[in-house]
Length: 365
Image (cartoon, rainbow, N blue to C red; front, side):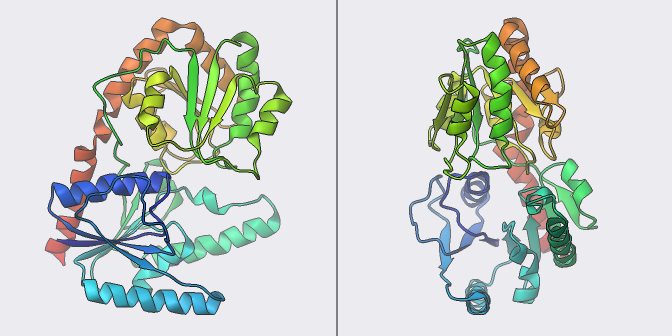
């Protein structure tokens, strides 16, 4: 089967890139799919994650004003797709243009849209103008999404965001499931994700201030693209927690960092899935997370493998972190449950769902 993935850039350290590297590689290596990935304005040939050597790449380079940009993109995309003549096209573009690819291409074959983020990502501000702009975008998304054969979301919560008959849930696969686990004895908490409003590190640092008062011997490691605009290091200093909080850029050996940690904390305002939760749990690390839309409630079983906290309740987030710090037996029992519970996200289990979906589309075409 010839499968084409359409994305923006896949050279970065983000969740979409990691997921695509796992799915596409497994489909190419184990299921013998012929995989092509089309990117946009990707000038970096070195990929952060490892992709199968069997995968082929095509990059569209466009510049100029909006009209020229759109015209060149459409022209190049049509040309590449026509040459490839795929059996199925899967669009992994969370931007607005991704919703209109079936119309741009004239739908030459069955097409699938993969939504990797919550709709909330479009709400940039709570102002009236922001709500109007967001409403217009949602209307355009609701229109374009209907042209896909299947619209795939990552969690059951995401089902509430869309009103499509063609919608289906397929979660993200685990990046790894190691034989070794964390001992959960290190006085270290961890979180992973780029510094942004979405990830809510401002909320995490305020919560950590309460944690630090009781347990100054514990540290918090934050791994992710560092943003000068957010300047969370300045906030940590202002809150007086800078000595116990460490900021690190993305690392390829993130698995080793989970192994060294004893608690994972997620402070996001919204999520697409929360793959970092499953990664930490694969190492037997219990999680404390805001119950944000959407993802954590699909992954965390309350009081079994971690804690879900009311979204935005900073004091309660601190309380649950402290509880895990102070109760070693609870921490280890939750960690054991966490490792067992994430087996359902093993790559072979998730990718087999994709294979079944692709096969059904071809047989019904």
